[in-house]
Length: 266
Image (cartoon, rainbow, N blue to C red; front, side, top):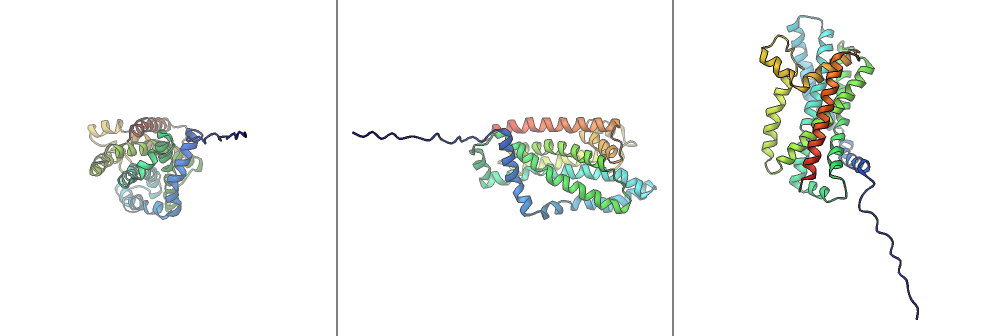
């Protein structure tokens, strides 16, 4: 009697090679729409460029100073605006995926839940850096003086902030999955006070006491101060340390809250 021995090959592991691999896979997946339609990155610059082109000259007239000096003060605030608006709305993409069922399919994929959030948040860094660079290049012909090392450092700080703020946007989307109108209500209610109370458009030094107090607890205020110092080449300024701390804290809080929300998602 002949005995046939069947050798069963070990099943391929359903899990990828780790958190870093999962994060990279999610990052590549989320970046594909940007590669296919890079015009969307440029189109989203319309609002910051409108502020730069229309609000900037008004600010020069109100200050009564030199246009180039005003740009040195104003352009860093526009970069923070790009980071703020660019990452605050990213949760809307997740809302759309939840409505179409695409997000549920990613939840059953052999991927770390934390990587699903971190990979998405990292994707937001790419358009942020591209848009920030474009804003600076547009301002240079009008007298803006760019310190290249300071610009690189400033974009890195904005990238850290953007990862955290994008993660918070995804967290809000997960919380509003069945009421997408609430996402936009919270979005609009918080976004503009954060922007105005950061001093990115107008100086707040001569404002009422309550505005200065509100600005002191607004992390964007420290981010704006850091960007102004960095783009002026003042890498060792005290404002830089405050902005770095604000960006790192926002990133840590955003990822911690977002990963927890993603792990609880059903």
